[in-house]
Image (tube, rainbow, N blue to C red; front, side, top):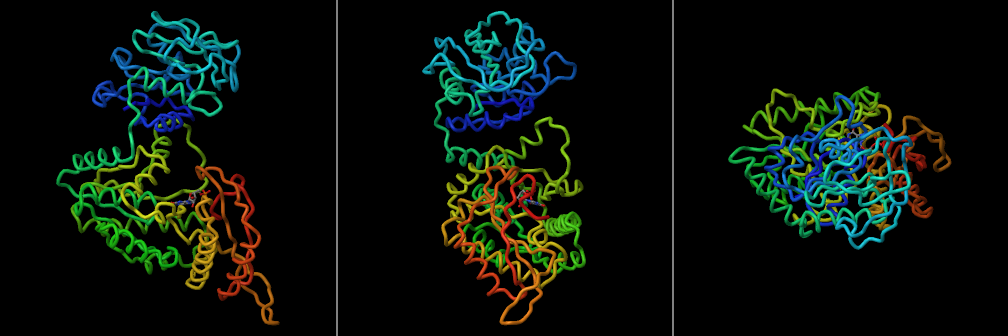
Length: 507
Ligand code: XMP
């Protein structure tokens, strides 16, 4: 295990990614993880991430005292290097020139960290401060024109520091440097695999839960599906799952999720049909944020009612690594664009401890774990579906007729994408119903009906996205099916907006 301490860099998660690519298991923790916890984790190495602060400023983040005396190899990156130097008696000052972007580095490749790597290569820098005095025992192992101490080492104590960022792809041989650190300096074997993770996760869940009871909500999405099957494998019927039908799910969604999870995977799953309650509360509501609030709150009420009948001590959450990163980094509050809802908002009086078995995994790793658990690939590669469901894809009021029309359009669109073999190339695809009517002509008669918009985007993280260039014949076929097969729709449009400035959903 390699422990990464996060000092708030926007690249910290990339360190984790690169190390996992080397088949080394790593965990990301807050910068001030207590020394006793570090000792308990018994890591083979520690990486200190970069961060936006200055080590000499009051209130700047610092690692636990004694971390450099544990005898565990440490690699400090950018702020991490400065933190290490500062703690060990070196000196960090504001640089005369700030250094952002490309720099050419000269290394002394007699050191393990640069083993097998040419002595001159391009690196990516992003720092204002720099090391002005090395701590005792350290020497330079790389320099650039502007940075004398671009990489430093105290080989005896196995302490290393890099002023540049090996985790970003703009640094040549960055992954090789990290691989050298974990193999040659920390002695890791690089044999970690998803099946190891599965075995460890099951053991950890059993220890944590004991003879207690866990409840959780599933939506049919990848994360909650994988988390639920993992719980079932670990603790069998001590896990109770609910699927709340909120009336704004896709066509046949509830039945299909029941079939997949309960019948095929054996998860102890109960279908709670609350569709009438949700639809009643959504009547007359057109504001997107109000829709989200109603659905979020009603969901909590339903969940609470079900949970109160069981004596559960734990709540399962499908939290993934990127969510953990968001909450451990000390980024400033960002403006609320949309209030995404999930089960995190359960009332405190329920006194449930959280259990988050996926919190150290990235999305693609969750998919691998799902395959390891034997979940079929159709569930594993599903596009995300928002908690407030079709309610935020029906612009304007959610009515039974509009829901019916959208469900059909959505079904046709996804069916066609699948049969064209494009579904997996797309990050997310869906249909939405616009809050306008359009004039058309059908069988010589004037029509005045609803408009469907199709949206398909390419994205890696859903933070930014580009519209997907669907083949024209396919668009033609979908359009024709939608207007011919769905009553009340006379027009189909295709959304060609990227994110930003658009968002993926329309509301
Ligand atoms: P936006 O529309 O913000 O969407 O670009 C980014 C991703 O988040 C999903 N999304 C939601 N998911 N509750 C959710 O659980 C929500 O309220 C919500 N709003 C958007 C969206 O489908 C996309 O994957």
